[in-house]
Image (cartoon, rainbow, N blue to C red; front, top):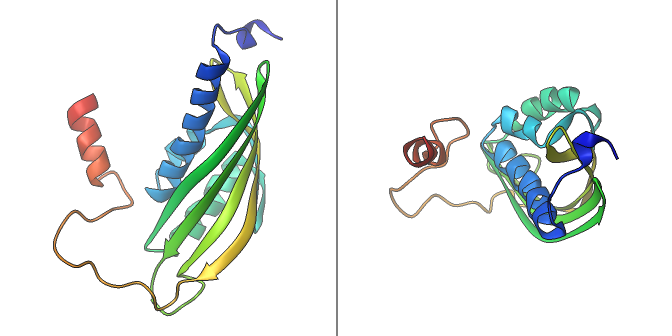
Length: 174
C-alpha cells in the first residue's frame, strides 16, 4: 500500500463513499453532466459498455453522443454489494435505466434495460473511484408507444445546469 492509499476510513465509510461514486455517475449521466460522470472514474479508468470499450475520456465522448439521441434517461439503482480489500474493492450494483425520446414509437429511443455495474474501485488520490467498469446489460424491454404526457403543469426535468436540482444546490450549498 502506498502512503496515498493509507487512509483512516472504516469499512462502513468506505462502502458509503463507494456507493456515492455510483450515484454521482448516475446523476451525471441523467443530467448530461459529463464532469460529474468523469469524477466517478480515476483519470486512467477503463469502461466496458454495450457498444463501447476504452478509456474514460473516450467513453465520455462516446456516451455524450449516445445520450443526446434521447430526450431523457433515468437510472435507478437497487441491490449493491461492496467487497473491500484494503484500498481496492469490487462493487456490484443492480439497476434499471429508462430511456425516452422521439419518435415515441421508436423502440431504439424508448426502452428500459436491466443492468449490473461490476466495478473495480480503488482508493487513490484521496478518493474512491472506478478503475475499471463492466456495464453488463442483462435485458432490454421496448417502451415504444407507452409513454404518456404529464397530467398537468409542474417541474420539468432538464439535462443541463438549468435543471431545478442545480438551482436548489446553488441556493442551499453555495
